[in-house]
Length: 251
Image (cartoon, rainbow, N blue to C red):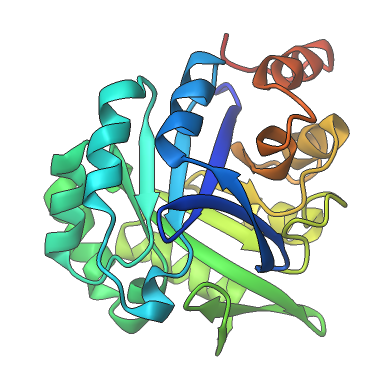
């Protein structure tokens, strides 16, 4: 059994870490490099940078931020936002990212996932998927959760696995920033459907929510933002709690 991973997520807007609710009403949370370094020192298993407005505003990828963070962060760094082409992935990996997250561009050009996985290895390619509940299903959104696609989550995840994605980063827009817990229903369904790891995102508010993502949702990793950014919990608190619950975590 693989150890579960705790991954602080830094949503970045115009060079600053922000956090909102349901992808809106963003509040400044600090400098991304400083925050990433702190989380690295506090025991994060990985750190994720997501430029949440880059695709919508058609801005370039944040190479400078990645280079600065890579000098101070000694855990795997995943970077996404504004990734449009093969060269963007190459440049982010060269700048110090260990993995690149693709969201909108995977929908516009699924072959980008295939080509990148073949060139750099599936382990470097994370497909991020933002979803909203629609009836009994979940619809996929693009451009930082702004545009509905008509794609159904389950079928899209399967397609991305087939195209070579190494991991799926699944964010529930309904749960994002609400601190009411992850969407366990879709997580558990996906865990029965695909073989690649699933990172749960959106809704962490208590230590119990994170445990539920692993035990009920059967996710492989939990992405957290608000509970760390605003000092409610430290990473060591999460790992201690999970360990006491019998959930295997990294030291």
